[in-house]
Image 1 (cartoon, rainbow, N blue to C red):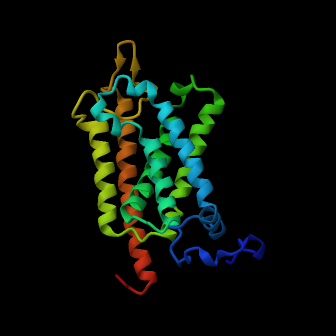
Image 2 (image 1 turned 120 degrees about the vertical axis):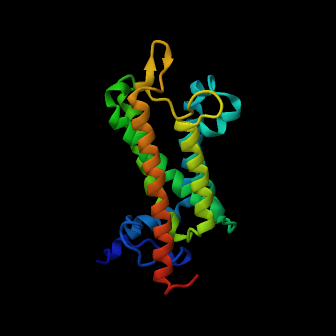
Length: 238
């Protein structure tokens, strides 16, 4: 069903043409996709602010993490940095497919993992002010919406998806299963707090790990499905 004319944004001709993709890989209404692309620089700025706040949020965790593992700690700020960089490179005509894939994976995975954890361990986050709780919950869901704009300017080639799978698969490995240096490096969750420190043997660790792995698999499926459906829409072109 076509949207009413009043939803059409002016001057859409300079935006990537929309394609006839199934709803599960392109769930946003067309007007919202256009809005996100038209105001990409504003969204870049918002994500950079979110990245700065995110690194500030992680400062307490940096204090007890080995320096060599710091790149694996601030998952959400890195994801917002990826989407900011992806949009900026597209606007500047310097697009990088691997960066688009990293942005897609990051926004899907961290955009859903944080609300998942906030709901799964709701009582353990009672120390958060209601405003901060809602900010974390809804801002991360906003990241998911950003992910579903990327298909308008990226085809998710297999090599690019492989880079994203490699990075986020490695994150899952060191965050939950084989920390390499020190303890697991996932974002701290209060359900693991004990009088003696963090106890990663508690069931909460497994709940958080399951969510992370499932979301990495889901992002992989969605990225490759988008690739296939875009090729089908183009008549099988490679």
